[in-house]
Length: 317
Image (cartoon, rainbow, N blue to C red; front, side, top):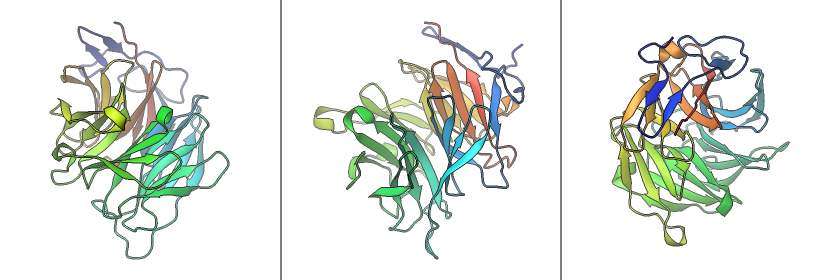
């Protein structure tokens, strides 16, 4: 039985519902999904960003404990790396504390992630190879806040969304000097954080702007340059990360401070499909594998039960 905010949304193009997503340590109130893990808030386990492991697990960044962790399908947490503590006096722009943001995984198991500290010796793009130790492979401006991260593995490129400088940086996957790939007013903050989540999808970079509540599309044009910014959705203030539900342009958006997940349709309209009643605790990021969406909740404002929630999405075109 669905509540008013149950995960049910119908458009002319697709229908998405939630069904059972496998066995679980605990049921999810209001939906037929399950918690992959309830995390240790006192231990700093507030997940900021999420990427998927092929065996059914997930990798996450713990924003303020400077840790990268792997969470198995049965909820076991294993710390893969702890990033260096910034030097005394370093203040991270907008957030004050050191911040571990976006994370992506290459097919060979290499993890890439973004670290912001307010210090030039640590802020930037980091790499962790399987069994290795973390290494910074590209410096990014200490006065910025690199946040969302996307991987274009086919072309060997990474794209980082800077929430303070309103810039998308492009970096070779092998490391090196970053390029300011896109800078535009649509990416800038309006008081706190601007460009936030980022995905490479169907020949374009898609981004969210937290302050302005928008979803943006920047086409990748000739020789890999950035085309004009196109605003694809509005009215999503506090949007953090997002993930596409399939090959089309429908996406699920984490509305962090409002404790919601919204389905955003290709025409820009949106419907709230999950709330705190369904187990969300300030959702920060999402990842989709097949018909399952994994939602990370950092509990930044609720201060209760940071978790990873799995729900089944079933498109019907």
